[in-house]
Length: 47
Image (cartoon, one colour):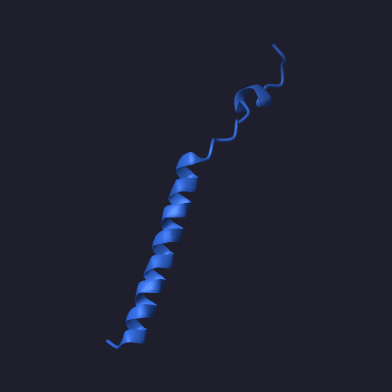
């Protein structure tokens, strides 16, 4: 393997690793959106 191929391989793997870590961080730290209560919205009769 020549030097340019090694540099390309290491740079591409680094970018993929950084993007993967960033998206895992975003998924684990994002607060969930409050979801409405589906049962109360589907009731025809108000209680």
